[in-house]
Image (cartoon, rainbow, N blue to C red):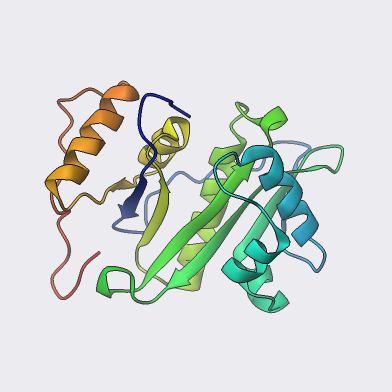
Length: 199
């Protein structure tokens, strides 16, 4: 995180679920989809990784519900060679984001001891592959403006800023400078949505 940038909620979109990096699971690791009881894994990973919002069992239920079949289709976990759950991400479906169906990349986290090893990239690749199978043509995510490592990851996976106001554009210019992409990078306002609805 970057303490010089005031935390604000920001949105990023990917106009297509084609052409993203497809990465293999590292040797020895295992990618598994939700099974009953995996809530405890979700809590342990996010309690270790999340410093900005309270992580509770109630938050899990409020954000994801309790239907095991839905969770099994949309929530994945990465396990270390020793069988330790070290990362998780969820792919949700939002039929009305900006007036059109989108998949949502939601609550991606890697336990601090396992960060910096490329595991977030594997989780991102895996959840985009699953969202593509689930059918929405586009994807979006929300994050905090001071999560610079995460924002760099999302940019590398083809997500672009959703910046519709001058204030949002100015914030994005600050973010791009902070992650050394340079102020010359333009931020569309608004992003070019396809005809018939927002992306």
